[in-house]
Image (cartoon, rainbow, N blue to C red; front, side, top):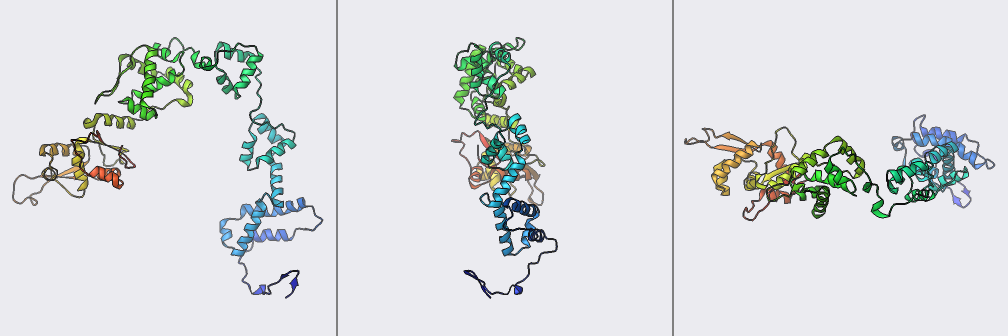
Length: 469
């Protein structure tokens, strides 16, 4: 058609191209009409142009949905994405202008006075909350004449008598006072030096816990363990948790500690109180408190003692173990005397499944033939387990909800004789078996027979992921 500078027009007839099917009132058409009507010329200031363009495009950015973009062809979508990139790019002219306008509208003098000066909200938090670059927030704050603090702000303690009382009379540590005031330890030290207050020795001798006095109405053993000690309340709490478990090793595992470290803490606790507090566990015999230890456990359940412990430990207060964790650890200690997990028909599979060692071979045989009925005589023939043992074990499994039984019918035994009893796994046992045998390794452990002469495992203890504990 004609040349325009160095570029050549392709010469295609635009009238032959398919029209873009946009309905009347489409957000893109409305924005385009508004942009076409803008009086833009070379003498118009860029800020005024950006302001008018932003009034057209900001509503479009908020109202245009993914469904609206799907109705566009590829060329129109690419054009809109390029426009959106220009609007949000901090290096483009309109992008820089939009950021400056947003910063000016948000970071007003009243806003900075309320959030930064009075509430002492850090500038980086303000920048992150409102999606502004931190350098722009700092620049705007300085433009408005507000002092910008780097790091912690200098803190002034106005009530000097309060500080003297807290440090001298109540023997609180510098760290405790600083945490309450929300300042640093050096600020508290500087004010103490200005007041000519004699300092306590450095190190642990200056900590509040070593100088705190408890009410004399509290039990004697509680005061002996907590007064004048650095971690007395922590040792009392861990003693309370330890006595819920059958062994110190199980308690140390729950607390994520080394057993020797926990044992050292209890030795220190017994030295502070002056007597033995519990008898250590032996084979198949769990640990148990002495008479003095049982009294101490009762004192720890007192509401006043619990409140003092909570106040002293705060976030370091370890939670008491749940019943299932204690039962799980107890079953591991009980070994052959462990209680077989009872399965209820309507209840979900238990989180822990406990199978005592004597039942391993029988249950492995039943799991390997889970789709078949079997009788005690058939189990005796297949496994070699004595018949009386098989009979007692199937009765135990039936009482626990693992097996269901039915008598043999006359039609199944036409020749007469004593009718047998057939056993099969219950639906609850099938559900539990699918849990404990999840994965090839766990299935092999549950279904393969074990050599009782060499197997010292107390019981099969499973969690829901299917790993043997």
